[in-house]
Image (tube, rainbow, N blue to C red; front, side):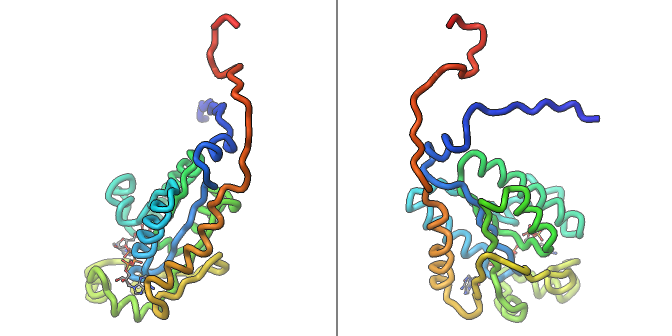
Length: 216
Ligand SMILES: Nc1ncnc2c1ncn2[C@@H]1O[C@H](COP(=O)(O)OS(=O)(=O)O)[C@@H](OP(=O)(O)O)[C@H]1O
Ligand SMILES: Nc1ncnc2c1ncn2[C@@H]1O[C@H](COP(=O)(O)OP(=O)(O)O)[C@@H](O)[C@H]1O
C-alpha cells in the first residue's frame, strides 16, 4: 500500500492561463526516424517563441540523454519512454506552457496513453508522414545504413514496427512538401489553438492564501 497524500494547489488553471496569456497545449509529432519531426518541431518552437508564446520542445534524442538515459529501444523501454514523457508534458501543461513533443512513438496504444494522460482537450497529434524509402534515402544520421547492416537492433521501420496513426489530428507529408510548406501548414492548425479563449477577471482577494496561524 502506498501512503500518499497529494496536496491541491490554490492556484486555479484559469488563473495560470490568465498569467501566461495562452492555452496550454501539447502538440505531439510522431513519425519514422528521418521523417522530419525534429526539423518541424524546432521550426514550430522557434516560430511560437518569436510570437511570444511560452513554449518548450521535448525531443526523443534529448530526453534519452537525460531523464530516460536508462532506456533502450525494446518494446517495454519504448513504452516507458513515452509514458515518462507524457507525465513530464502533463506537468508542463499544468504549469501553463505550450509543449511540443517529437518522438517516434511507434505504437498506437502509447500515443493513446499520451492523449489520455494530458487530456484530449489540450492535445493535438501530428503524423509526420514520409515513406520509409524516402527516410532511408535521407538517412540524416546514417542510422538506416547501420540498421540494415545489423549494427542497430530493433530499428524502427527496419527491424521494429511503426504503426501508422489511425486518426491523427493533422498529417504533414514531408516527401511532397518543402520544409517551409509543412511548417506553415502546422502553424496554421496549431496557432489558433493557443490563443487564450477568454480573459478571466478576478478581484485581488488574499483571504485564505495558505497563511496559517496569522491573526485575521
Ligand atoms: N533502434 C532505434 N530505433 C529508432 N530510433 C533509434 C534507435 N536507436 C537509436 N535511435 C535514435 O533514437 C531516436 C528516437 O527516440 P524516441 O524516443 O523518439 O523513440 S521512441 O518513441 O521511444 O520509439 C531517433 O531519433 P529520430 O531519428 O529523430 O527519430 C534516433 O536518433
Ligand atoms: N517538408 C519537410 N519537413 C521536414 N523535413 C523535411 C521536409 N522536406 C525535407 N526534409 C528534410 O528531412 C530531414 C528530416 O530530418 P529530421 O528532422 O532529423 O527527422 P526526424 O527528427 O524525424 O528523425 C531533414 O534533413 C529535412 O531537411
